[in-house]
Amino acid sequence: MKIYLVGGAVRDHLLNIKVTDKDWVVVGSNIKLMLKLGFKLVGKDFPVFLHPKTHEEYALARTERKMGHGYKGFIYHASSKITLKEDLLRRDLTINSIAQDKLGNFYDPYNGMKDIKNRLLRHVSNSFKDDPLRVLRVARFAAKLKHLNFRIHNSTLELMKIMSNSGELSYLKPERIWKETYLALQSIHPHIFFQILKKCNALAIIFPEINKLYGVPAPSKWHPEIDTGIHTMLTLNVISKLTSKVSTRFAALCHDLGKSLTPKKILPRHPGHGKAGIPLIKKLCKKLKIPNNIKNLSILAAQIHDIIHNIKNQKPKDILNIYNMIDAWRKPYRVKQIALISEADARGRATLEKMEYLQGKYFINMYKYISKINIKNIIKKNNLKGNDINKKIQEERLKLLKLYLVNTNQ
Image (tube, rainbow, N blue to C red; front, top):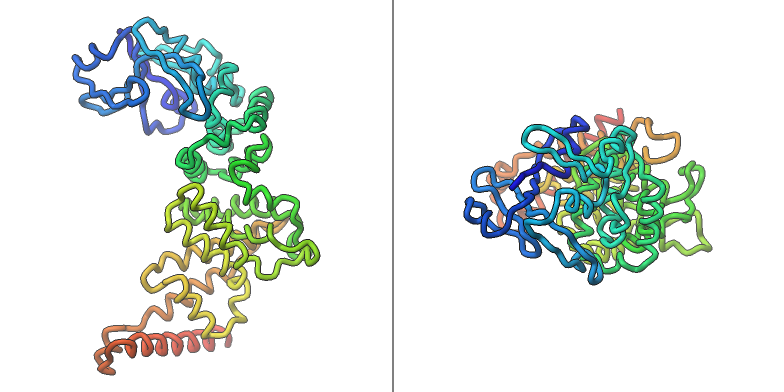
């Protein structure tokens, strides 16, 4: 029995990236022997075990054969006779098909180390096309490794196009799509994920709501890039430099979905696009089973981002309504989230990425100022009960808001 470290741990070690998870492959063993050694069997589809002490995953070397549609359309064969080379052949990319033994020796039958040196994402074999999830995985790796100048090999990109055009992507489970998307949104350059999906014809299948933004014009006076799809990617790129929170990044991605519904006769104007985008956001989140907190923030951002651009010209009552709308008193973190999304929208325009966005700071500072009121003292001082409590609190907040506006506009 021989044990090898495989996959992402080896890849990240070679790239000097911090290794967070370790996966191991076991050659020359079987289920009975692994259980005898104290390993816990956890794999449902194929033999995967947890180490009794480290709880890291150990999988028996295996081969796989396509028998149906989608991610689960495979028959797996694991036995003590499967070689390391055979196991590595079934993996997606050459950079993920490198193994390392406990003495530190590398086993690289498919030239993954060479592709790491050349910064290439290349498929191991033609069986790559059997698993449609790999289209999303490669797009995610392109986003994850963009800062290291990795690019997708042309032959792999062509295979991804073939897979997208085959109809196989329609068999992907929503949970799998969201998991890959979530991981991509955690990367340094998440916009690359969506750009690659667009390039290989997968965006129209997986995210038609985003794909339909391409080709939709906006006024060149406000959007030098003109194309709303391009603006959306620029916005996602900017928000990713402002925050690492996936919820905020996703909301920025969805902020202009409503523009795809604008009647052609009134283009390039988009009146009411924020409200128009709400059903699209709800549909997308329901389809991919996206958590409610992310969905709710996305809906709020779609409605409010344009108002923040013009925050200094809003009436005090309308500004207070925005804070109430986002439930800022119970969820104060939303104030910054909305401010950052609005900033990303403003800076997510060709030639304007480095512009200063004072409106966001204004929105945050104004909230901090009117949050100073002491609710307990107000209730006690005025002997309030029931609905009168909230009414009085709103009155006091509005007074402070007006005072802030007077002081800052002097």
